[in-house]
Each structure stands twice: as structure tokens, then as C-alpha cells.
Length: 87
Image (tube, rainbow, N blue to C red):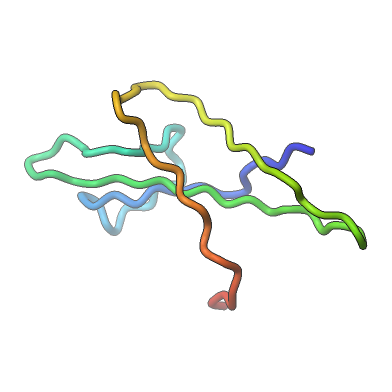
């Protein structure tokens, strides 16, 4: 089964109040070039379909395309455990 991202965004230290929803490229492992050092981090959200009784997810793979690689590459972090969400 393939599950596509249902949402994405980017948090930019240099533009804390700027929405990034219309961008076509997300940054990862980035230090933006500005007058000061500015960190940029991207986030993806997926909706996993409901499983039938007895079904389990046994693995997952995330595939990304790189347009400007670095020598040490970005880290991929595990999601936070599910919990209550703000309304």
C-alpha cells in the first residue's frame, strides 16, 4: 500500500510568521543564507488507513528526492506518539 502525505509545511527561523503552504520545495538539514544563521525544518503528515481486525503494519519506508545534497545528510526523526489534539 502507498500512503501519500496529506499535509506538509516548513518552519523557518528567519520567517516565524510566514506560511509555507504554497511552496513546492521543502528544506531539510538547512541553514538558510541570511544576514544571520537561520534554521529551516520541514514536516510531513500522513493519514494511515484503518486496519481490519487482525491486520498490523510490519514496516514502513519514506522516500524523498534530494535536489541539493550535503555530505552528512539530514536526520529523519520518528513521529511523536499519538495523543490528544487541539481543536
